[in-house]
Image (tube, rainbow, N blue to C red; front, side):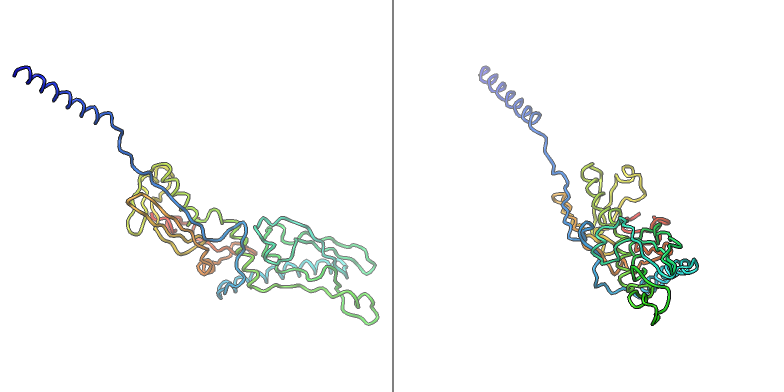
Length: 303
């Protein structure tokens, strides 16, 4: 009996040790890594242009009229300076220039920047003007321009043969809607990759996941608990849905799998148009004018 008891004890001990070893040596449980899937059904800066069928609001049209008046006066002043120098004929000299604006050729704008050369009645060059609007390099400035490559500063004369075949100088002013479309295209090229909405949210969300930063999600907002230290920013949260601005977006979160689905939409042109404001004599922007001056009041990031 004693021998059997010892055998039973040894077997129990070995079984206990086996169970303990199985617990110690078994692999640790694995948890699913949070993931982000992004679908971009929006505006492609590299291939698209601002639509031509936008219904611009009264405020935007008034701003366009104001700028085009300035452009008109600038071209007229250049023509008058040539006249004062003794010119009776003007030749428009093109200066091919990269505007720096994506796809601007699709807007059907006058091709190049230009200067004006003035000639007297004997055909002598009396004055070469500076390149108009060269400093701004704004494509919207090309909606106001001298309408002829060669033109005269004198009236038609029955006995003045040149006036039969060469038109009088006149300034062409394109529609205000075309000016605004060009202005928005120029603005998109400037800020398209840095707009503080869908694109920025996409970058931050992917960083949070890849760097394993702590976060929390409720029914309306995403809260990044580790973002303040990582990004060195006062912002630590943003809403799950945003319908305004350049890149409206929607985020759906599946808590069971820690999966984020981010969908970026096309620009909200109605909202952008409502924010039109002048930043110089020839430039209109369409972002919130307070963005750089009072960042704490700006959305979509939540303080």
